[in-house]
Image (cartoon, rainbow, N blue to C red):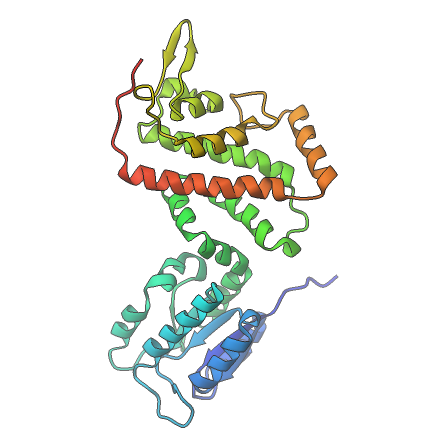
Length: 336
């Protein structure tokens, strides 16, 4: 059976014919490239068929309004209008510059437009500027990659503050887990095989990473957190909540003085709730067979993922809180 490959619709704005063969090259890469000779006409397609477009490609110097000469400020003017349209839709479409690069002050123009959302998304979309004579293949590959990840990118934009914190303090697998769950929340029709029970375990893994981050910042002592391969989730949660932790053999420890804490009460309750459900083993993030059965029965009875999604959104707030706390944190002496 022939493998199905989705074709992506690309809006290309360039007043010249296509001597470089961009449309033909794009077709070989499953791109349907629609060329417009002026921005005003292309803008109509962008505004009224926004969801049908997977990428936008701009010439370095083109016509803004039909019947006019190419405008040297074309890129700057168009990018500003695109950003306004993106803001209305609460989503950005990957966009690129395909140009010979011989316009006056072209390098300065690229610097003016390579900022904000475009600069932040470069890791997902690829570089911004491609040369007409040599970079067509690279541009088509970049568009395919960015288009295939568009749902990922939309979620990353919606939760950009949280993902910035994850990038700074957590590991890439945490980012991927949150991305997978949030995509299933926002785009359920494209995630019909989503296994909520599996991902409940992953939420507790994220809390493990949170405790490790607290440990690296000096907020959580090694003796409370546990060994490097198994974090003591219950003790870590108690300590950060300002509760007394029993270390055994008559030894206890707590954060600061009575009444002091790292986790404020609301954050502490969210963390506790995620850890408590079906969790009998405080030293591991894995569900035992009884715990998995308990959650599986819940999903089978309701046929709903809201249980997981609710905890995930709460965890988003925990991560946001942690990021803000970490930025202003000053070490507090622990009392024993």
